[in-house]
Every structure is written in C-alpha cells, then in structure tokens.
Amino acid sequence: MNTIPPVDLVRQYKLISEEVDLAILNAVRSGRYIGGDTVSDFEQQFSQYVGVPYCVSCNSGSDALYLALRAFNIGLGDEVVTSPFTFIATAESISMTGATPVFVDIDRTTFNLNIDLLEKAITPRTKAIIPVHLFGQPVNMTQLMDIAQRHNLYVIEDCAQATGAKWEKKKVGSIGHIGCFSFFPTKNLGACGDGGAVTTNDPALADTIRTIKEHGSRQRYYHDLVGINSRLDTIQAAILQVKLRYLDLWNQQRRIAAQRYHKLLKSILEIQLPQELSGGYHVWNQYTILVKKKKEKTENFRNYLQKELQKQGVISMIYYPIPLHLQNVYQSLGYKVGAFPVTENAIYEVLSLPMFPDISFKEQQQVYYALKECLTT
Ligand SMILES: *Cc1c(COP(=O)(O)O)cnc(C)c1O
Image: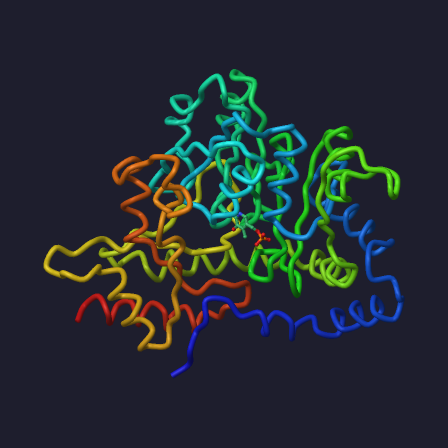
C-alpha cells in the first residue's frame, strides 16, 4: 500500500531539478547573497504576474502582513477586522502593530469571512479589513471592496494560500490596497525556505514598505522610521524565478485534481465537498471537506476518520483545530465560546485531503476507496 502524503515537495522538485539546481549554483557562485538583480528581477516578474506595478519582497508572509499594516500607520487604538478561521499570522500581524484584531464569523461553504456580517463588526476605530483567501478560494472582492469604500477602510489581502487565484479575472493581491504573499514551501508558489512579498498599485505605499523592511532607512545608515530586517534571500529569489514559470500550470493541475475529487467523492453522503464560488478562480492550496458529526459516536467522528484514513495510507490534515478567538494568546480579547458558531463547528469537521499539483488519479482513487471503506464500516 502506498502512503499518500498531504503534499509532496520532492516530487515537484524532481520535475524541475535541473533548472532549480542551476539557479541555486548561479546564485552561490555570484557571491551576491543579499539583494542584487536576482531579487529585483523576481520582484518585477512577480508584480507582473499579479498584475500590479509594485512588488516588495520580504522574509515571510507574516512579515508581509505586518509591513502592510505598518504602511497604513495602523497601531495602538486601531481595530482591524479579519477571520477567526485562518493561520495565526493573520491576527498576530495586527497585534504586533499594537492594534486589535476583530473577528467576523465565516461562511460554511467557502470558509472565508462572511461578508454579510462584516458591517456589524465595523466601529469608528476600524482602520482596515484583512480578507483571507483561505485554502486558495478568493473572497468575493466586489462586495468586500464596496463595503470598505463605504466605510473608508484599507483592504489588505492575505493571499498566502492563494497565489494565482482570481476574483472576476483579477488576480488576488491586485484588488485591495495591498496584497500579502507567502512563499513558504507548501504554498502554491513555494521557495526552498522562507519568503514573502507585498504587492500594490500605489507607489507611495511601496516606498514606505520598502523603507520599513530595510530598518526604516531610505539611505544606508540614515533611519527615518522604526523598521525591521525582512529580506527575501537571493538564493530563494533565484529558485522562485524558476518556479514562477510553472505556477499557472501547477494551479491548473490543482484545479484538475479538485475536479477529480469532486467526481470521485460526490456519492459519499457523509461528507460535504468544497465548492468554487461563482466569479472566483480557486487555486486549491487545500481540498478541505467537512465530515458531518455522527450522533452514535462519542469520539469526534472527523478525528476517528483521520486515524482510519492513516491506516489506509492516506495522510490528511486539520486546518485549523482551534479558531483564533479561542486561542490562549487572544483570551484577553474577551471572546467566548459560541461567539462564532460557524467557525466553531467547522473546526470539528474540516479535513484537508492530500492535494498537490501532480497527485495522480490513482492516488486520488485510493483516497476515495479509503474514505468509502472507513465510512461504511
Ligand atoms: C502561511 C500563511 C501566512 C504566513 O506566511 P509565512 O510565510 O509562513 O509567514 C499568513 N496567512 C496565511 C493564511 C497563511 O496560510
């Protein structure tokens, strides 16, 4: 029996190993390990890919979010609205500036923040909204931008899981005021280490972000702002230049794999399949199903299913087991159990199945048979 991992980065590497090896060697041989043309060329290529004039690279998606908030001068006393069903970095970046994260419950079919609930969370202190394009599914940015404009709020897109996704033909990261990307290895465009980028249409914002990420300095040893050190390494930029050329193909392969899952799994009534929102181009960083609860089982049925699948060689993941508003770190925000019922249900039901561009039909069939077996016995 083969084991099917949640992602297989070695398989991806093997397909492009010659190009990646050469890019790494060239970077090492150049002696230029920080910055240089390799980094600025990648920034230019990535901004073109996203469809904006400016891209500032940085060390991680987490830094990208922090830099974006700082660029708007968001800090103590300000509120930023986001989803409680995301990776911690989204909210943490808000807290790092001194501002307060304010959460809004999600929509059960998209796992993204429920736009109908957004306006109720806006107060005179709200400065920005961070929509998260979770699992590769774009948020309905038409509705979101409309609300943001009416309330005069900045929009920072968390595109970490959605590089290449589109809302109504526009790439995510080009629709809000700022887009934040992660090149963590398992993201759709992943480096061989950490990396991130900020995209924007606004030259002044790009300049501020570049200044903050370079120790608040526009001219070396002259510091105008309190900044940080956040760089995309030259070697990572060289690798990303190679991988960017494959990203559209890989996203198409993810979409094909998602279609195959839809067809294979639709007869299994105990699970709810993810759906692509009309108007969106989903890039399937995750294929996340909902496993409905079973009354007769005392143990959480999703947890049971995950263990059973593992016995059959199918490794699944739980994104995310604890919503942000109930994390220890955010107890001081005062949210109680029951604050966001859709999110609080989802955490017991979500299960992300193996998903990567070159997952084979046979492997997906094995996932199907394993699920079928576990659910009927
Ligand atoms: C991965 C991720 C981040 C953080 O990116 P890093 O590069 O790991 O810092 C932020 N938000 C979301 C939704 C993510 O999935």
